[in-house]
Length: 299
Image (cartoon, rainbow, N blue to C red; front, side):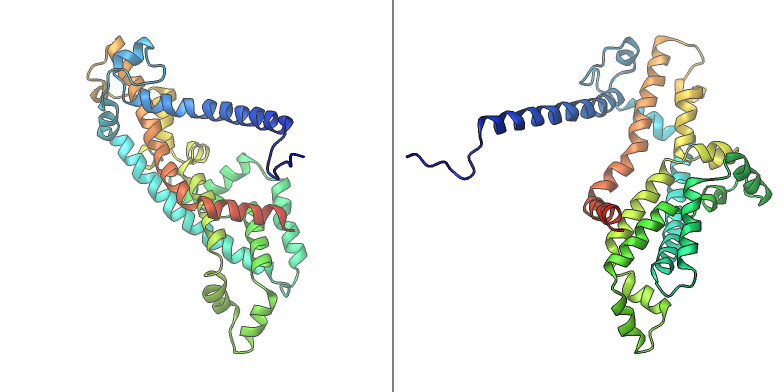
């Protein structure tokens, strides 16, 4: 009698895997096409874009779009502002989130349950955008960088994830052991908790940096000074308001060539604005997956 191999798949299994792989391949192609088109359009000739001849591969290869991007002073200023907003904003977020989550993770904190409930309550109900604007205006933060940092200095959801990570990763007995030798909470947090929390710090850094880099709505409300615009506001100005200077287009006449240059600048700017996060994500992907799973399956 012919013995079946242990890992031999039946016809039904092979059909199942074929269907699943086909669906995943279809999703992959649907997701990949816009990215390929974006790259191709950003290096195609303005006339090809104006005539709609770019479908998949570049037509009339040129880097003119990227030259216009980096020649535009508003774009360079927007990149500079976004780097400032992202770097300093993420540091503020990490500081507030980590110390808050650590305090909430301690059982000996008086009123822990009530404080945690009050934090969670803000996730269900909020004052809305008008009270937030009035508060920021009364604090004198309109048209300042702090208007994009202080109102979002902490995310309650991220605090809960970080608190869960601390409770599931840092044993209570560890603090009891070091406290015998006179170690206080500050030293325990800075010298033991933080070095053991690289995964969750990387996850929170990604969450907050993406939020700050993609800042648009808050900048639209709180920032009126063009010199403080982040890159997303500059992108919005070009994509929606079509505020292209005469220096970019070389002429004020609306011709096919000028329309093609506008489209070329749009695609190049979109790619340049997205590129930093695309480069950052692969380096912290493993921490991202680990941190999210801990926050989602632990109570």
